[in-house]
Image (cartoon, rainbow, N blue to C red; front, side):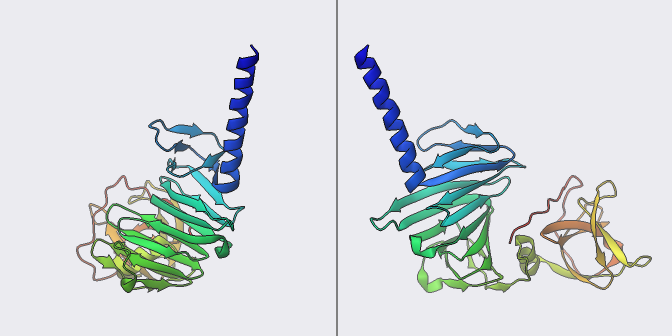
Length: 294
């Protein structure tokens, strides 16, 4: 009996020591909203965490969010904070600390993640690696979007160093406040100047959009809807005379997909003057979401 009790007490102490070490030296995950799951390193079962839950986040762990899910991760007493946005996942590839408590950190991701580094001195190395580019020096505030064919970075504040997917510093780009960069299999785009608040949609509009001009005939403002038909809700308006990047068209070509605020919306094609051909076609079930990024 005494032996079993001693073993139980020892196991509890070990678990508490591990938890304390993870809290002090690794990262802490917090669930903010929606459905958030974590996959522990070297395991195969996803664990669903309730809203408000906190858990250690270690090397090899993966967190993923659903359509409404949001989570955030803090490192080294909030020296850095990572915000995982809906329908995204984040993996901690590397985390180690030196005797002077400076850390080496490496993340990889899919979807959209915001990074905020409050104290650069606490990190010997802080990087984000994707298939299309690597951030080798983080800005104070920046966001990364990883899609199957491209990775986009937008800088809210500070200075970041971005290399192509080979990590070759000879092709590095230095990006500062309100700059966007896109990486693809063929290399990095030139730095793109954006207007605050900086968003991925704004970067897409500059790189991929075709400019049109609003010319509403019987009204001063043109309605913007969340989808490509009258059955979708109005989410705002665009004034007459304003230029907009056209990003796509509905199957019947009656509506254009445009950059609107932090994401996209849909407007009547007849009310837009343009010379845009070969725009991608989006289905009638397309439903836009408005993201606040930086």
